[in-house]
Length: 288
Picture (cartoon, rainbow, N blue to C red):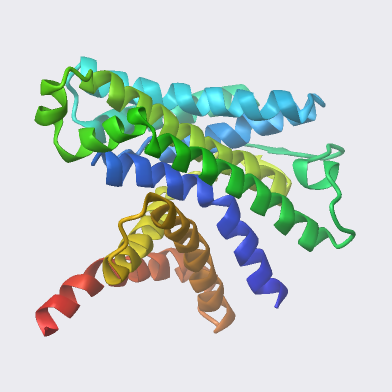
């Protein structure tokens, strides 16, 4: 049971990545690979500041700013230099590897003798339940903020930008600025996942972000399938399903390991699972 509880907690930690990928992929139609680098950057900034015993109200804003800057740089390269967004993300992700390694000064950084957001606040005595409640409150706050933003005039303009750039441009909206802000917001959310998972696992590692974009993609794809099946149009329900997708994704991986699949084959199992989720709607259409 603890095995699946850990998967549930990890799913909540990865909610920021899922929401970030949802903004970049589903709202702006931009395949943003910056995720791998900004996720690690969030963990690196968190570890560095916590080991220097800085308070939480300093750490989280610093993580948001760092992640936002990495996304904004990708957006600037794409919009101002007219570079393909996929290539722009790869370039920034590659650069962030060196940035993260330089900031840490070594390949990994343990959080020995430091407090975390999960130990600083004690809502209940049970550590796992306390972690679950804190993660739930953080994820709920982030989701409410994103949901509120997407319902504002600015958020509607963001959503319209992904649907029809030409129409939004004709209305006088600065498309380049929208994309830069959108990518900055997406990577700030991704960095929050790095912030949470670093404190959850007790260390940060330079390679922790490799392939992590597949987690966000898998979560969004699961949510997309559910949204299509249920004919969901509400922004709030869509965001809730994205969060559910992140948790389901981790629970499936936990089930894969629990039934005895070799841990060395976990990445393969992840790829096959995402492939099945992607192809399932098309297979059902063919069957119909």
